[in-house]
Length: 347
Image 1 (cartoon, rainbow, N blue to C red):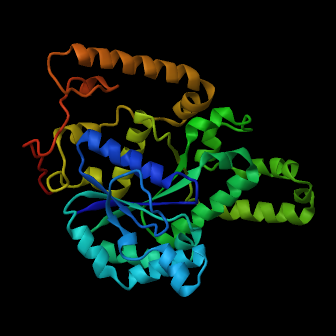
Image 2 (cartoon, rainbow, N blue to C red):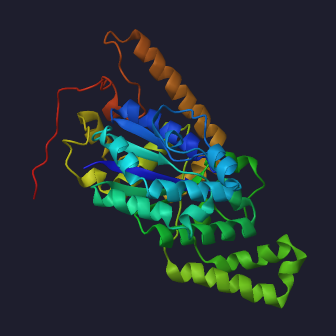
């Protein structure tokens, strides 16, 4: 049973960077991973592209032949892909049981009200794919209450439209400490707590917001988001190994990978060891790590990394992977088929 992530998000939220980083991270832990580019406008990818929609149709061709703009061209491309599903199915069959990352375009219409992307992945579910939607948002949206609430609405609409296990992620969290101080701790934003506390900050943001009409509208929007009770966020710094490890564990549990059969999922002893809960990050740790004491944490992790590299150079056993967690120290990297398969009995 193949597993996959559907990587969504607005332009600039870091989707391609995330796919590149997650692909490298999975390779480091021994999980076979392939990336599928579903953006017909993305002609240059940093990651090795296992399957590319541009081999089927390109945005340039659509705009030239059908006289459509960029947004309309992307929507047309997915309608075309929906009617040529055999191309995608055949390409995915060649990937076997590889874990798949789908790098999607940034047009929000695709995952808010246009049905083609939703229909495509529903068809893949019928083929046996276990999908998780990973919705990325730039953490810059935290700097203004209006941006944050707008992002909440977009995220909620995407969750309702896609109807899949859904993980919302605030990317570039390592940049937050360089912005103006936030009025609340990060847990207020990640847990989407009482939004009524933002109303006074909305009024300060723009004079128009101080009118009674906008006050009632803002409160109605906040009440609607809270009434659904669906939206919360994880945080991610894509270049930080511990942050990537934490997010992958969350995604694995959401999609059932962590509970499924290890055999047939390219699992190794290294991956099974990754499933322990010892390094799961708590809410208060996130605030301390990325805002209150970011520089101190960065310095400690850099020092640890340098020490591990020195130990690796002096270690007699070649090819060991340095790691922050003691239980993984001295474990050789899984290259290809390790010859060890973990098989869980079905209950």
